[in-house]
Length: 291
Image (cartoon, rainbow, N blue to C red; front, side):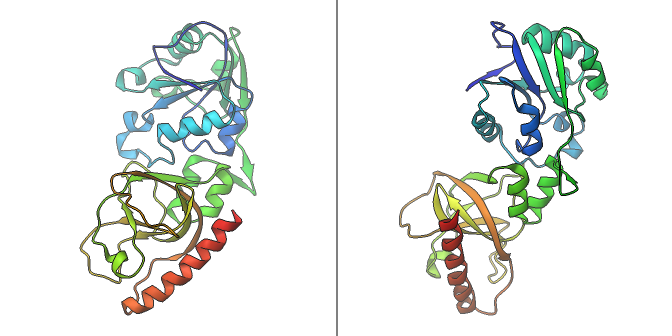
């Protein structure tokens, strides 16, 4: 899949374009993208520019979003560098300069709640009224009485409800990060871990223990502040990769979250914690084998 940033887009063909922020590329987004050969998105998230105090923690980086879009058979991802100047463009200018002028759109697909242009004055009616291209407006997707939305899925991830988040995303929630040196507490307990610090810009699952895949290997992952020990450190992601013995320091690790095993809690002594960790590892092994 080709990835291009405006204004470096070749006007070499007419395009069928799906337009949206598409954070998470969830099942609702996939309905909008269905049948499009190009996807137009924004980086960074527009809210971070027009209302920074309300900037959401994201489900996907641009890199992950591109992977998910490509998996849907899309030929091209077009990224608009969203800044204060672009936010000032009128809805009409967005249609004229971007959808028609830069992209040569023959069809534009959006969700019914899509808004665009200065002060979000553009809406589906404005696009439908333009006869230079066909407009497809996809209704919001509802599953079990709940609208599938990025904000709802973010809430599920924060609450540790990984299975439901994965179901609505249509894929497995991922986090990636560089492996850093820790205090080696896990090694002392017989469970050496690779340590990652959660990225502030991204959603991180709520404190607890999760069954995951780490670069494709089964891994028991603890997220939290390790209340059994007085470490003085902040939130940490500790990854114990089953049946693995190697040096991961400085490498990027990709975590795929399969299921939540339990919440974070304080144990009376390290021995009780180790017993529970053995149980967590065996559950992880079974879940990963069934995945």
